[in-house]
Every structure is written in C-alpha cells, then in structure tokens.
Image 1 (cartoon, one colour):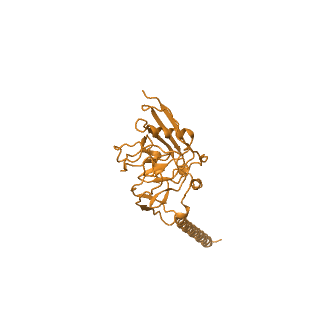
Image 2: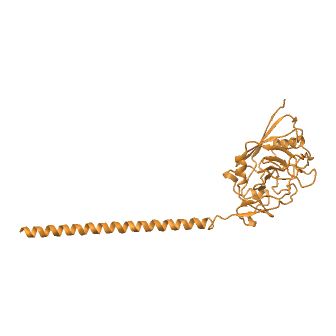
Image 3: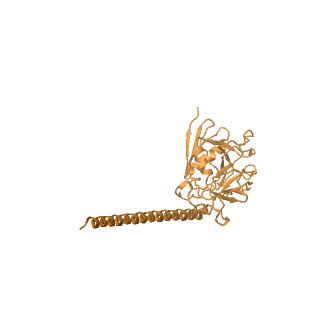
Amino acid sequence: MSQDKRNRQRENRQRKLEAERKAARAKALRRRIIQVVVLFVIVIVALGVNTLLRGGNDETTTDTTVAPADDTTPTTQAPDATSTTVESASVPASYDDYRTLPVACGGTLPDPAAPMTFAAPEDQGIGPDDQVVATIVTSCGDIVLDLDPASAPETVNSFVFLARQGYYDGTAFHRIAEGFMLQGGDQTATGTGDPGYSLPDELNAAVSPYPKGTLAMANSGAPGTSGSQFFIMFDDYPLSPSYSVFGATVDSDETMAAIESVPKALRGSEMSVPMQGLFIERIEIEISPGS
C-alpha cells in the first residue's frame, strides 16, 4: 500500500473519531439540559403543591374582643389575639367536643373526667404558714403553682380538696385568650360548670393590675359565685379586684408560652376557643408545714 493511501486512511479514521467525539459531547449536553429542565419542573410543581396545602398563604386574623359573661368567667376587655380562622361549625361547644380534637402539643388523650359534685369542700388541714405547691400536668408541660393559704385560706382549701378528689383530672381548658388569660376547672368545658358549691370571696384590693402568672378564681360577676373554675394570667392585665387571688405560677413560662400558642377560634367576639384539646391530666399537691 502506498504511503499516500495510508495517510488518507489515517485522516479518515481521525475525522471519524472526531465526529464520534463531537456527537458524544452533543448527546451529553442534551442529557444535562433535559436533567436541568426536569429538575426545574419538579421544583415548580412541589412549590405549587405546598402552596395549595397551605391555602395559598399564611395569613392570620387579629381581633380585639370583649370576653363573654359566662356564669364563672372574668368579664373584661381582652387584648389583641392572633389565631387562625376556623369555621364556626367546627368550634367545640362541650367537653365531648374537645375530646374529638387533636391533643395540644402532640400529647395523648387522657381518660375522661369523672363527673363529681359535692355539698362543700372538706377541711384539708392547711395552715396559713404552710407551703402549698400545686403542679398541673398537661400535654404542653407542667404548670407549677405556689398557693397562698394566708391570703385565701378557703379558696386554697377548696382547690386542694378538688385536686385530691380527682375532680380536675381529664378536664379541658375551655378558654385561652392570648395576651390575657387561661381558664379551666369546668367539667362541662362550657364556662358554666361548678362543683356543687360556692365559695366566699377572698379579695385583695391591692392586686390590680393582675401580674403575669397570677392564679385566681373565676366567677359570674356576682359576689360569692366562685366554685371550681380558675384562671391564670398570661401577662400583666388591669382586671378589677373582684376575683379571689390565691397563688401564682413558678418557673412555668415555657409551658404557659406553649399553651398560649395553641390554635384558637372565636367565642362571641373573643378569639379564645382552643382548637386543640388542652387537658388537665392531673394536679399534684405538695404541702410543707410552716414554721
């Protein structure tokens, strides 16, 4: 074979090899373009689905409300409360309704409250100098309360009596007014329940405004109508000195903040109906004799 022919064959092989390499590079480029386009489409679709699942936005509603005059409910101007909008038909109206809701803070549903009624609280033998600590166990954490038997002996005695009887076990908090107060202690979860008796008022005119963490008895607005329902202040608030103050929270800010953030719906004009079940699992009582 002549040298010229061998050179032409070599050049042909080189051109063929170069063409194959060029085709391979073009194919690889097309493959990368397709991958980028597919990834882009997947991201866009995922974002669209996520937006649909969230309802298209994260808007909340803000409402300045006046608390309703339930039989045993503090009646006052409540601060702005921010929560999600909820259809009125789904708002719980009874204790059984609260037990159908998801449990707050990812907890588990406790045993139902055992209906109880009493003619009067039994004497718990608590002295004015005794240290009385009540721990309310909830799915959002413990609320630790330092009770004040010196200022409110009959109220503290009644609260300890009901707690020891298991009256509060399994009951639902029926009112969470953000920036204002948390209310519970009603076996009916309607704001109208009582233990079968009423307590005399033990008022302290100096407690105004009510400081954050204050524990007091709810009433119907009339003297001598406290029973089992109590409330705890989320923040300082200028309530009238018409409620028996009998203690305060201790090292419970984290739990109270978690409770305050529970989703809510409107009750009348107040954004305060819990849309998750916040239950009192039990109340533990510790009493240390005073000096």
